[in-house]
Image 1 (spheres, rainbow, N blue to C red):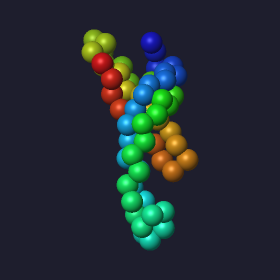
Image 2 (image 1 turned 90 degrees about the vertical axis):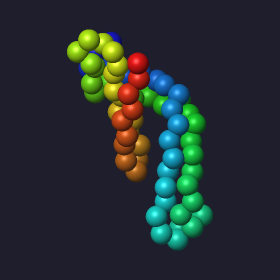
Image 3 (image 1 turned 180 degrees about the vertical axis):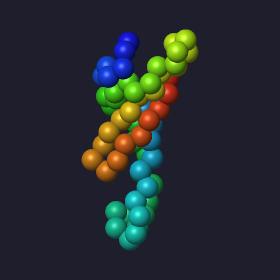
Image 4 (image 1 turned 90 degrees about the horizontal axis):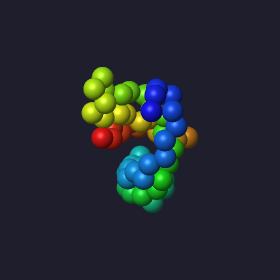
Length: 64
C-alpha cells in the first residue's frame, strides 16, 4: 500500500440535513462499501487513513 492508492471498505456514516428540507433535518445512516484514497500511512505501518469524497463533502477514517 502507498499514498494515493484506492481502497474499497465497508463504512458507516451519518448524514445530517440542516433546515426544514429532507425529512425535517433527519439523520440518515448509511452502511455501504465505498472507495477511498490513502492519504496517510503511519511510519511503522500501524494504521492508515482513507479519505472518502462525496458530492456534499468528504470524511477521513483510519484503519489498522
